Length: 297
Image (cartoon, one colour):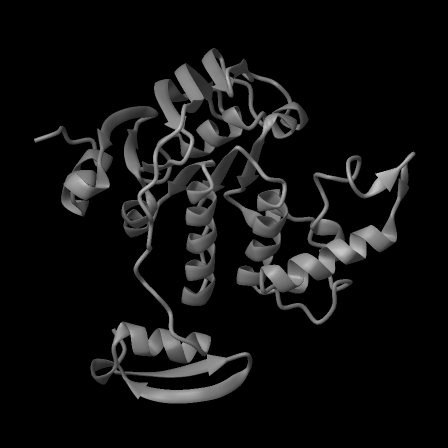
């Protein structure tokens, strides 16, 4: 819509551009300060055994209305399965149910062959499922806690405490390591998570979840509201997990993200999977039509 745009990076003026004379890649480079790749590079790998399965799952929303209706899907090791759908078609209730945050009314969920239906989140995490939550501020972080504490939220009783006493040296060593590895940019590890930018908040969550070495990662809206540099970074880490033989369940309202990252796409409409597609053999038109409730051609 704009005729001109001004690029500001880290509070400093970078450039003023005529929109029609600049490419998307050039604009992204000025925004981030380096070249940004818009192409997701995925190497071809051999799929492993089935690691996660949902059978005839039914889940109600907070009003008691059925939002997930007899849903079935499965994921193999080394696979990114993308869930494409318009917001409000049961995605939130599905994620809550499989991660132990909401009770299902019927059906079965298995992880690594073990029934995790309606188990509590701690049991599910311990079995190998981690999550990038849909709302990073409400579900992924304690905004009033410092960054170093947010980086260990799920691991207090495993690696960073003994006999109920926190090991502050280990906590700070962990924070220094992850801040460097994941390019998190705080003023200090003691800075509150709520003061970080959206991209850095998301990096804190990803650093914590990925370093838990999950067998299955639920990535719900992983790049919502982020700049192009943070999006590229997160996409690379999701693909890296997949290349390591891990499984990723990607739930995104961004159709191009689902198309680019997924090895297989399931389309959800009215709480049901209405189509399963190979992203290499379909297009956004066909996926979009299924998202709107249409049939396969």
